[in-house]
Image (cartoon, rainbow, N blue to C red; front, side):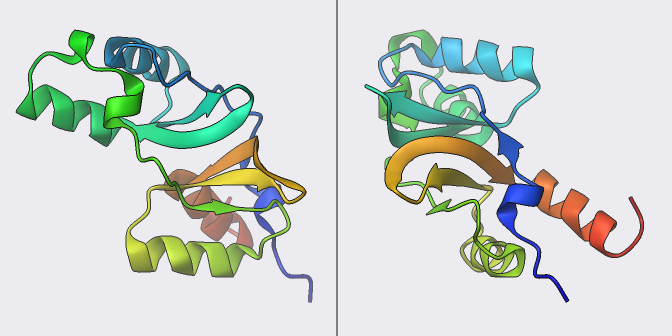
Length: 133
């Protein structure tokens, strides 16, 4: 039996965002891409992740996202894995810690983004692996 890996189910080469852009730009990109998570990259290196929940929290608490940067709202140390990581192990870690996503990075260069694996990707994997895709 072959063990499923993240490579099979991740969203490859995701759109990334710079940390110094206004949060309103992150919201607009998420809306345009129909995405809930954007890796934050600076100088070609992963520095964080911003989610739609992060944006909504800033809206609710501060109410002025145009003066807040992505860096101020992002998660600075996102959960990461390599593309060869076992699906079951990544899903278990995400569930245990309630992570909405894992940033898939190059195993040789852990700050270079290759993809994103989200809870939606995990549900698609579950459907496929149980014969319901």
